[in-house]
Image 1 (cartoon, rainbow, N blue to C red):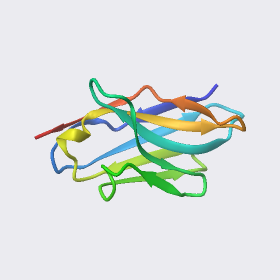
Image 2: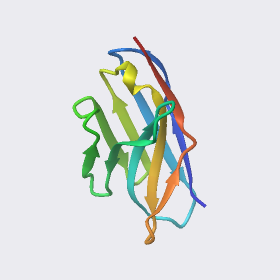
Image 3: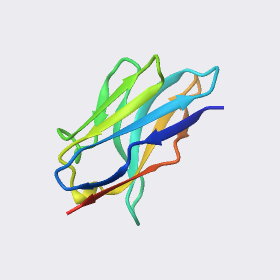
Image 4: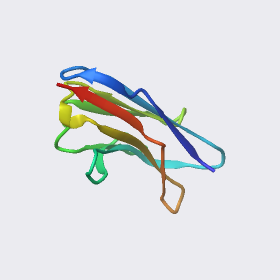
Length: 117
């Protein structure tokens, strides 16, 4: 069983920065891609950023140049550094990991990010 635990959300003023962290725990698994998604009230969950085992990254257009995703393969962690935050970045942020040969998706419980104007 794989468990993803996020940390680092909170309340920040527009223009500020936050760092989200996610740690995967369990045994006997190999992680493929990792990433962050978000869901704002009354909206669908959307991709924020992903990163492969080799470090290739992909970002939503809305966060390019402001957010940076990184991972530590040895520690099974993924971070999201968010800067120049905007009120429209307010959402619950979910960590995602694609695991094993079957590419099974796992999700964290989510962490709230609120950006005040």
